[in-house]
Amino acid sequence: MAEKRTIHKHVVKVAARVRIYVPAGSKLLLVGWQEGRMENGEIGFWYEVPDLSGDPCLSPQEFFVVGTGDIVPEGAVSVVSVIAGHYVWHVYMPLSEAPRG
Image (cartoon, rainbow, N blue to C red; front, side):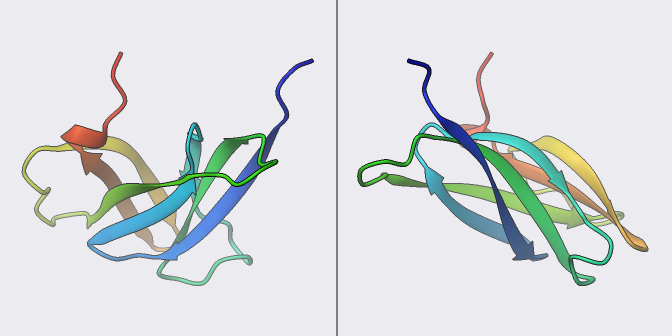
């Protein structure tokens, strides 16, 4: 039988550093903004999450959110840029947490 997977969304306020707790084995699918569903200053992170039966172990994922013209943190790796209303946010993660491959 195939493993059940679901999609989960985490909405966060834009900040220089963002930490999201997701079940171990979750895969980041998208970082974006939904007009009419999110306030200015918020962005969403969508994850594919493995079967949550039982007691899932939550793992922190850390991101840096940088505005255009701002300084990128040293050692950060680009994940995606997000157009959110009148703003463009550039999302990075620490090199130590970046996916390998």
